[in-house]
Image (cartoon, rainbow, N blue to C red; front, side, top):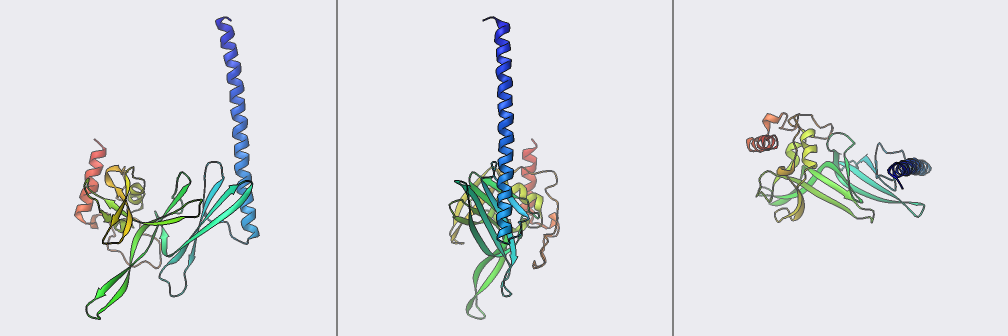
Length: 262
């Protein structure tokens, strides 16, 4: 076989491969649309409004739907409900998970859902309940404090809630609460996508926290941008500008920005 014949055969094989890939892509797109339509019809039959926020995986075999409803009159926050839909063996199944004391989505829009393999993660601001001793009353009273939480669900039905902290320094194994950044959505989103994240047990909190390391954060140019979180139940916040954040926090962020620009 001469060189020209080899080239012709190679071009013919490449053409067939491209056609096959194109047909497969069309079939895959059609399957995704069909599955989305089936879920839409299923929700309609259940008299459930199609959620504003839905996240599909690549082949539409799994979907996470987010719903936020007002809590009972005595509740301090809202109810967050995550529904995990899954197609298996041509059947649609659903696992539902809910959390109370939820306030609002983070960052301030309804678009930030990550997928980690078959796990979905969603961020929000909620109330953390703590009991603090009052010497005057000689009793422990419940105190609710706004915190940043990561809510995650698995297809198996397992759900997980984690407090989110930021580690400012290399040897900082505890970090600071990310509640400082509630009014800085650009900065929050950058922290949430840090390439360095660990799970740490904090004895004083008697729980595990999700620790985001500043060393793995890529800060955008507008990371200092301020935007008041839209939530009518939220009390006034003292951090109404980036300049009002504690100096040690601003200094650490500025150092990280300078380091990444080298």
